[in-house]
Image (cartoon, rainbow, N blue to C red; front, side, top):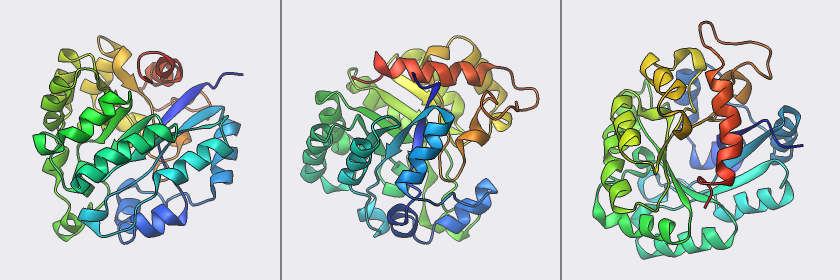
Length: 287
């Protein structure tokens, strides 16, 4: 049976990410999202998504240069996808500061059978509009890998002095515009719709058909009206559903089609996006 939806934004709930890559960051994020992280094994995660009839897109992680914390290797995500192919698809990650090594790692991600590359400009402390990093994006385009970028504010570092040293300006959506223009064959997915600069992202998606918007990291009832208007209307084909697990659960971020509850005042639009995310990647989104 085909899955009812694809959760486009799933971090690993395991110690290697939560206690390694995210060491010192988890507590602030839990306060920001007003919920504890959901810890568990990859087998537990597979069982959870199987019960929901949802495919999870797992994310690797590499922000070693900026944070000094260990990466989640691309091989870890690839192994999980091989072990649980019925519920997991994976995206790799590269640290853009690693230069030629980062470009070479994009080739490795493709060879591992992963479907894209995850970037977090704020945590990785790099500006996507700096052409010095574009060889990495060109490699993604060459190998047919989508590029998923964190955009907008960040629950990581939120409510802390200096935001734990994390700069939000790196994650302004408009910083992706020049790269999307220079690499028209690259599918650019902007996660979390870029709030509070979400209208920049709307303008970009209207202008460039290779720009998609991921609505993960937000409870449906808190998504701004301007974003809801676009996902119901002229940009409906360019929206993707996701949760941002383990900070937010797929049940909390869903339309209610599986939990039996709908967010107050929020129509079936999220359900439409969930179903479209399940079908779109098989054509234009997954190269």
